[in-house]
Amino acid sequence: MIYCVEDDSAIRELIVYTLNAAGYTAKGFGSGQEFFECCSGETPDLVLLDLMLPAEDGISILKKLRHDERTSELPVIIASAKGTEYDKVTGLDSGADDYLVKPFGMMEMVSHIKAVMRRCGRQTAVPSNVLRTSGLVLDTSSHTVSADGRELRLTLKEYELLKCFMENLGTVMTRDKLFENVWGSDLAGETRTVDVHIGTLRMKLGGYGSLIHTVRGVGYRMESKN
Image (cartoon, rainbow, N blue to C red; front, side, top):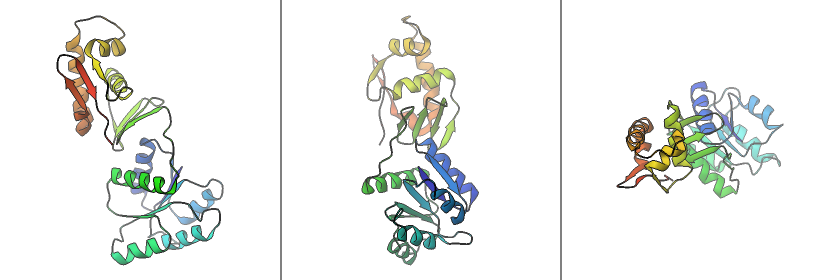
């Protein structure tokens, strides 16, 4: 569980959406009071903490966490528009594990979270229903696909093709095998159908479309992206 303490609702919602799409479980809070009320019942694995908050600022919240035995070792990443060297030093010296300066990219944020989790020995498992390579996430339970936190609209066949690829990253899939898996038939000679659908899938995946490689004379292979 990751908690995001951020008073800007648009930023908070984007962060929570991205984290959930990346396979984590996340909750957002607009103030320190809301955060502490929830934290008293469930301690998260990591906190993303803004500095400029209503009523109580982030540094005060951070110091309270560090002085509480239950949360003294809780990983905290400050995410703030205050980006001077003094601000960073103050935040880190107050007990933050990392410091992100706004505006930052969502994948940059996820990368920092992974790094802090590794350092603190708090790796969180990605649910088994989630297939992921970098920022490309396929959730079989909700039947959704997202790229860097943005939901993609795929047809059923495009979704099934992507699922087949992501379940077999690095493995060459013949056109006949793909046709059998997605269309439910072992009928040979339908390679044009597979090619057309993979073409549209690549376009919809944007930058991630380049992960699907054509293996000449055989079929296709999807590579992983770290």
